[in-house]
Each structure stands twice: as C-alpha cells, then as structure tokens.
Image (cartoon, rainbow, N blue to C red; front, side, top):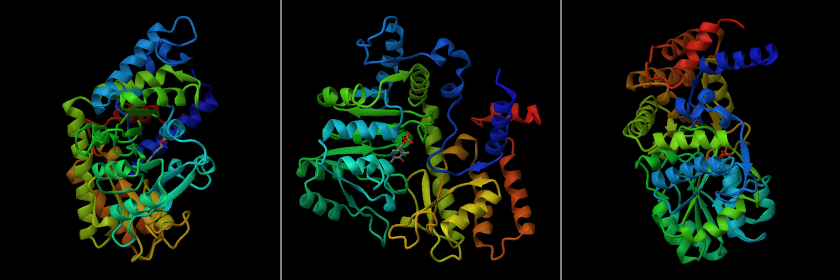
Length: 424
Ligand SMILES: *Cc1c(COP(=O)(O)O)cnc(C)c1O
C-alpha cells in the first residue's frame, strides 16, 4: 500500500488528468496490456545489464527470453533486420545511434528545433550540440513544408556523416525515400526518428523508412505506438555490431524488465487489425479536426495534416501560443504552444498551437465528438473577451463532451476507479 501523502498526490493527478481532454500530440493512453503490471510478478522490479546471451549475471536466461521476444516483435512489426529494445527513451536511442555512427566533431544535419525538430536532434543546449557539429536545415517558412532541394544542397555543401529526419511538430508525410537517396549521394547515414509516427508506420499508414537500405530508425514507444515510455533502434544487420555496443556499455547499464514486458505487449498489439483500425481513426480524427478548424477560419501550418497532429498558426488571431494554450487549459483541454517556422516570438510565447488526436482516439472519441470538440476550440480561440461567464459555459460543454459514455475508452478502468474512490 502507498503511504497516504503519496496516495493523495496520485489521486489528485488521476482526477486532474482523467478529467481533461488531452490533445498533446506526443501523448497517448497506452493499451491496458502495456500498463497493467499487477500480473507481471517479479518482472515489475527485475533489472539486468548486458545484451541477450551475454548478461554478466547468473539467472538471467528467462530475462533474455523476454528481451528476445520484444526484439523479435519489433523486427516483425517494422520489417527490420535488427532491433535493439534496450534504450530507456527515444532521446537515448538517438544519442546511442549518433555515437555508433559518428566521432566527436563530425557533422550532423537536422531540422532546426524552432522549425519542428526535436531537442535530441541538435538543440543548442543539448549534449548533441556539444559533441557534434550540428548544421540545421529549415522548413520553408512560406509553406511549412520540407524543402527537399535545399536539404540536398546543404548536404552537398556540408557533407554530414548523419542526416536526421523525423519530427515533433511536422503535420505532413515525410519523403523518406528521397531523404535516403540524398543521404546516399553524400555518403551520409539517414537516421529516421519516427517517434511521433511509429504507430502510423507500423499500421502501414505512413511510408516505412526501414525499407531503405542503410537507414537507421529510432523511435519512442509512448506516442502513437500506444505503449509506455521506452525506445527502440531498428537497423540493417550490418550495423548491429556498431549500434548494440553504443547502447550498452556505451550509454546505459541495466534495463528494467517491466519496460521490456510493456514493450512486448505493445508490439503484439501493433500487429493486430484492431491496431490498424485505431491508427486509421487517429488520422481520420486529425483530418476532420483540421477541416473543421479551417472552415471555422483558423490557419493551419501546411494547410492541414497527413498524420495525427496539426499546428494552428495564430498569427492572424489576437492570441499568442501561450495564451491559446492557457484558454484551452481553462476548459480542461490540454495542448501545447508551438513555434511556427520563422516565428518572431520567443519559444516560451510562440505563435502556434500543436494539437494531436492519439489520446482522444484511444479514449473513444468518434466523429461526432470531434465536431463538438472543434466547436469548443473555435469558440475558445475566437472569443474576444475571456471572462468567467464564457469560461464556465465552455467548460461545461467540454466536461459534457469528455464524460459521454465510451465503452472503448483505454483509460475507462482508471476513470471508473478514480470516480468510485471519491475524495481521498
Ligand atoms: C518525443 C520525441 C523523442 C524523444 O522521445 P523520449 O522518449 O521522450 O526521449 C525523440 N524524437 C522525436 C522526434 C520526438 O518527437
């Protein structure tokens, strides 16, 4: 049993989170099999270090079986020759891959963080910028799209050893085929970080970069793939001898068995028809939301979406990203401010708002729900006055939308238990 002080805090977090509508594009409600550890026995706390068959402890052969199962399922789901399932997160998977492919001071070409790239791709304060020479490529500030010809020109000029593709706030499909060709032309390795779109890739709804020779693929597990926190590296068999030692002993020591169990369950789910249907609903909900927001007069970066996320361009409204995020939070709707390509405002304020559909779709939102959601978002972002009366009215609508009964809510058991517990 948890002590009362901690139990109270967790209960408050349950109430807060379960009584919100989560539109953060990077989050998801994992499938129950990936989080319900009550049946996991000793796997809840076991940990060990070393690769399969080479763990320097006695008694780890069944641990190895779990790790092998997770790795086999990862290879099958993504069609990769080799999978390493040990990285504790997507960021650490990236760091290990850089270390496997580069020496300090080598050049890494990646999307600027201010254009939708990720911290671990070259943020000035991230260790990657200390270790390597990071050269950023932009998105086209007019269209918001990746300028592939410019990326080729920069690659020819800078001769990077690694080109990183795969983003945190890019709403369109990425042309991995073309990027892998560019990488080949300049003798670089393409690192495709599919953290955000892993679920779409696994379901066949986005091109799979594992198909391109020599490409190294990294991902986190807790986003569209609908598992819990973790990381995977997928690569050709020929790179295994460089990738594996860069993860252990190069970056990490022990691995928790619970994470491997959760990952194996996540990947089993990812090969089912129900998973594909879920990813189709995620994309369908994002497209519908995009269309309704456009019809309601908002601007979207790139004019829409091919994926699970969209970025609202607030430039023509009276709101900053921070203000828009704050208004939605007043209604129990979670989102995040986001830099636009060429954004004149600082990151803490920003002029964009990123919205994603993985969590609401896991919680059972259908088209009707998305229509009501879009109405609420348009009313909140379009209101001239943001006073208590308007907030109360819209909050009531958001609460009513959230509490519609949904038998397929992936967090239904937690929501029911939290409601039943009352005040702790
Ligand atoms: C979320 C994300 C990551 C990092 O994943 P963590 O598991 O949070 O470390 C890496 N790359 C991209 C593009 C991401 O969006």
